[in-house]
Length: 94
Image (cartoon, rainbow, N blue to C red; front, top):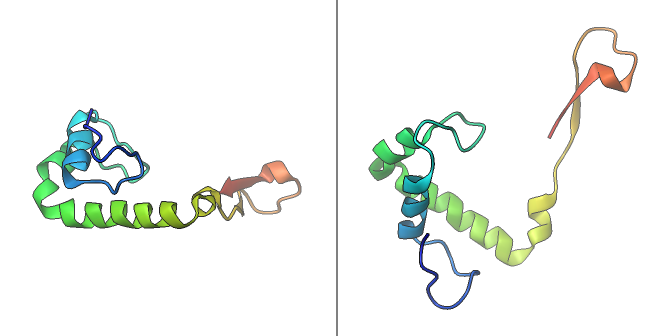
């Protein structure tokens, strides 16, 4: 587990912390819905680390401003079939 520097959990994420988390994640499982497994993140780290760190920086900036925005979502009902008649005929997508 990465060491907490500066005495606070509200510090920005460091590249070292993110890399340690990637190395600690399962190699053959995808941590998110994108389907990229741990092996991908490890083997491509030098290429993707700047983009990944941008994501963590944006998350840090949003969290610092207003955590409520992290808990908001737009729910859309997608019809499962033609001629929907009940709510169960829809698939919710967030």
